[in-house]
Image: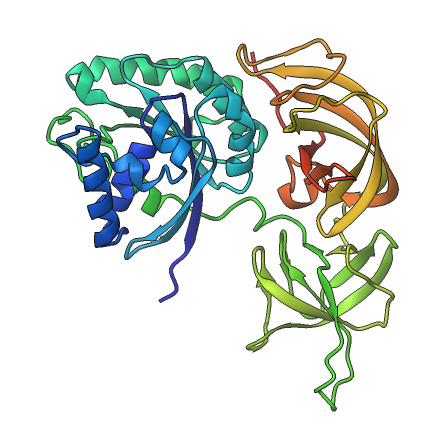
Length: 424
């Protein structure tokens, strides 16, 4: 049986125990090798600890181990008999908020940690705002270190109520947020249910991760597929065809579907959907395929195949939310490169709009420039028209990157439209 896959991220303030929680998940699900465990034990002894420091299973950089904080996004892969997982452990320090954007950009769920002794703090609000902005559909509020407050039910209730108000402000529905009391250090309610919390009748963290639905909004969205490569096989003497390879970004494609090729706007019909294993009756979001069309149309890398009944809009003017990731500030008039799907084009930065204050979770007046970690509305004009959707509707065709032309470095992550509406 093929197991499904859940992509999720962890986030939270410094010292809330994210790396320890991830290490506990890996350790208790037997997803680490014996020599890795032995190395952690030796390193823990060297630090004067009596028990293994499971955070060392995740904090791989030397600087991370020495400082005791997570700096980079650490990706981990593990599986259980029920499901496979791709986990992004993101940094907690405000300096690395941009890394949280990277780690959460493809997540279908986020585990947001708070320290039971401190509750919801400014970095909790900051990360929750980023997760809402990126349209992560589900949240787990993991109240960690509950052993340090004597497993007090009142602590869980108060923190959960405080966070519920924040989540509603950010647009999360009540059924999208689950609160779980845990102790990553001793393992309470992480993989195994704790006898210290008889008042808690919800799932363990792993139990929730194994059972939560993984069907994202892209599944039911209109069909979108950026063309990555044009294929003309030389070995198929019977079929001198031209195929268009790419990953289905949203919706479903099947033979007989009417599609439109953008930005040109030519309409045609899908003749066949193929993989290396042969033709398919249909292919959904996340599937890499080669699409054959009924008509011979001039299509190249960077074009988008879309459902003809609900195509994206084609425009060279974008109003977007921009997460600025670079140390060098962004000023109006900057000339950069914009990467959207498999197409890269030149772009000019227009005006800067209101900025999202992630500390107060509110919009403030437009800044004169964007500094690292700033999130603000921006107007852009591209050299070539692009087929785009609002990020709130389809993430794949509503997202883009800004790139520094001389170096090729990524400067910003952009989200078309206004994906985050704050509810008073």
